[in-house]
Length: 232
Image 1 (spheres, one colour):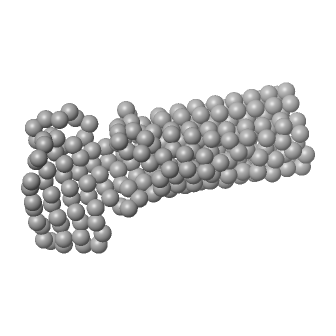
Image 2: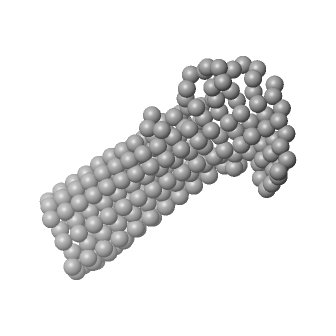
Image 3: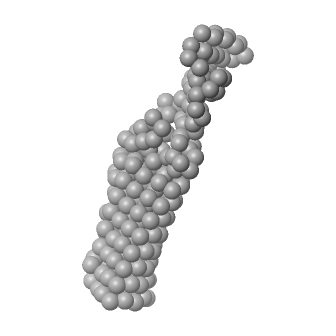
């Protein structure tokens, strides 16, 4: 190959025809028969097994170390994107997307998306965000919710949106069926709102409000501009 930069013991050691690569650190891209171009691996064992993958950026010890033919991936942090992943994944933070073998996933924050394996097109933002997700796809989690907290388990589910606080409590979530649920973490007290569930499509929608007071649930039914209200 030509126009390659190799700095460190055994960096790019098995490279053959790859061009315009930069490998810095002990054994960076050191084990794979690198034929891909325009890869960057900085850190001990980063990009260790790269072969035909192209335009990857791996920064941190063991970042992207198992990826061989995946391309257009970005991993920043110790053991970020450490499994043999697919294409166009972004992992930023310690052990983020560590087990990922899928494609088009984005995880920002320490341990975000840590156990996700074959899921695709997920977005996790926050410390521990989506940490225990496994095979779900097309999910969006903002905040510290790990995928199974606060009575909400979406570890293998798809097409969910969860907004949570820094402690991992889900505050608002939209399920795969389009239902929206608003949650409270406050202790039960007179008139306190625990959760609200909104469902429906088209012009029809149903809003269920669950209060903390026993036998005092309110049910609202919205159909167009017509509103009916039943309190039990």
